Structure formats: C-alpha cells, structure tokens
Image (cartoon, rainbow, N blue to C red; front, side, top):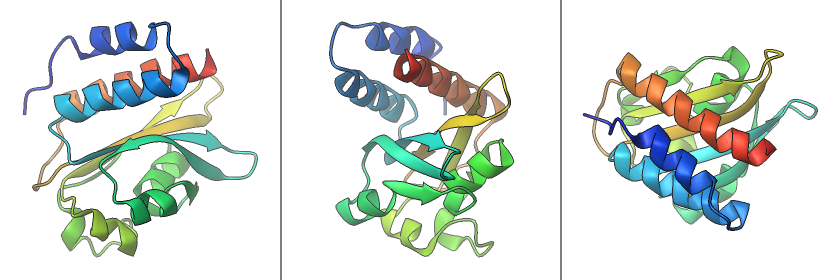
Length: 161
C-alpha cells in the first residue's frame, strides 16, 4: 500500500483551520482513514495520572466498541500495550490473534491488519496513541508506521496547542 507523500502537509493544513478542535480532529482522522485505506481509525489521549487512554476521536468503530474504547487501561489491548511499551504495536490479523494483545471485543470490529503508534513527549511520556485497522490481513511497513507516527505528532500538537 502506498500512503500519499503529502499526508503530513494535508494534516497540518486541516489542523491549522479556524474551526472547532473536534471538527479538525475528525476531519484529520478521515484523511488518515482514507490515506491508509482503513476500516477504522482511533486517536486516544493518554492520562498517566490515572493510567488510562481516553478516546478523542474515531472513525469506523461499531457503537458498542466505541463505548468500550472510550477509556482503555494502559497495558490492555493494542492501544494500551502500545502506550505501556512506548512503541508501535502491529498485528497482521487481529481476528486470529491468540497472544492476548487484542482484547476479545476488538474482534467485533472485523478488522484484521492493525497498528497503533504512540506519541512520546520530550520527557519520555506517552501522550497519545493513533491506531489504524484494515479489513484484510496487512503487515505494516516501517514507512507506514513512520507516517502514522508523524500523523499522531500533528494531531497531538493541535490538541496541546
């Protein structure tokens, strides 16, 4: 899969618009969703004070899953493990995972290829995670992961504003 080279530029333009933050985040998630040909896309803000990730925006999650994903403990599920390890977590096929990384409810998304990347601040703390799930099996390349990490940086810079 080829992710557009101008993705960062598009996101910076969207996040620089004069509109409510929630609108800009949702528009940015749509851009990422389309660029990665995704089935879903999630953006969580980390609160290490209470060790949870909070859903800031999402596209494509079933309502029941979105409710479950609204508050994720650090260390649980793909996003929580990504935040705990401070490095990307990928899965070629979430549906066949037996490692325990993917939570049982995650299989209800019908996603197979999934990746979650952390955004780590200057002090080494995870401040956000950005996830993308695809309908079919997919091994994410280093280039795709790097581009997704750059997307997370752009989104979080606007959130911290």
